[in-house]
Image 1 (spheres, rainbow, N blue to C red):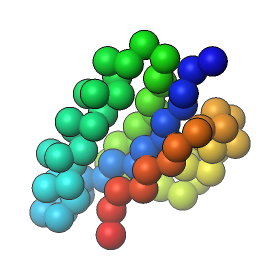
Image 2: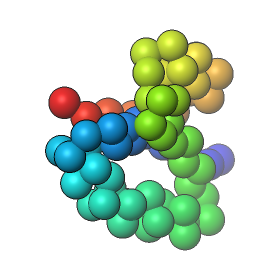
Image 3: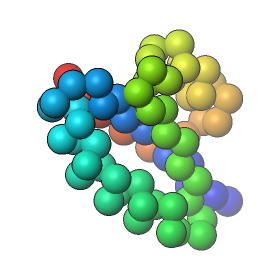
Length: 68
């Protein structure tokens, strides 16, 4: 059984761009894990509608909400 991670990753201003640069390390690490699938909602995809749809569809084990 795969571990499923869902993350929002907007980078539409300076604070979220800074966060994005650090979060890339986490995403890269997760992608190297054979038993982990990561869904990343980037930029405009990082909205409530897309998030709710992916939670319903994929039933992630971990949800990471980046932003402010």
